[in-house]
Image 1 (cartoon, helix red, strand yellow):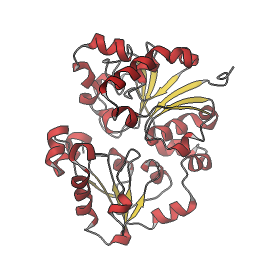
Image 2: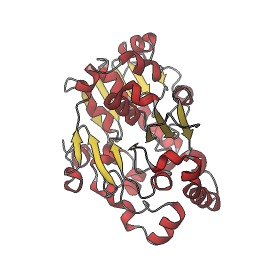
Image 3: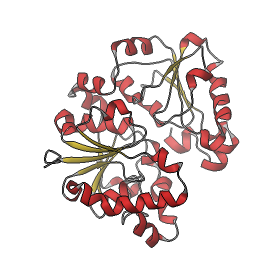
Length: 326
């Protein structure tokens, strides 16, 4: 049989969640896992997976409404026929992806930490307020509108690092893990090769004092407005000191926008830098929780949505205090 060696399934659209999956379960499980991946996972990484299907959110989002609805409907109807192992094998990963309801159906899963939203009750319960629940479920799958980021009763376990306060609604099914502890037992060479992190990359990154973590907010505020935010940061320092680390879902040409700044665009989780002992004097972000992976010796600059009025309007007030509890 084509899929006789598939023993596990992982829904993934986050380089960090993929790293966490490997740290938790190792190379052997990785090689017997069927990955349903999306845009934050590079083609290079997908090419190293024995089993995978790429389901692009970016392509879906750019399609007309009728195509988006039809795509979800068709996927939910054919998933068990095309991938029969979905009926039986353990499922891990993200429960908030566009394809999760169509593939999960009424089964249970283990949710892996993805970022700040895993600690946000508001994010967890956002889909509960959608109207026409029955219609959504009929189109996309019965898991739709049941909550996300571990909230649903179909999620039997949530694996977190405990970066921030854990909402009461998921405390009883949360398992806390320590990345540094997992790293001591990990196949480090396999992980670095998977993410294409080379020796030259590490040397270059270590030579930088300042890191700016970009985020794909251009659809909310426009590309030029987003670049203005990052220019204000970059202009505070000498160009040779700064590294711009792009988000895995970024589409902006940062190398063109900042020709004198080193731009690192490989789809690698920042947490891997930390595990390798790479530190900076300062790290800047708008709202990325990744900066809290760095030790206390690193100055963390969490700009929050107050850095732009449109972000405030569309996302609400997100500060270091109300998002991260610090």
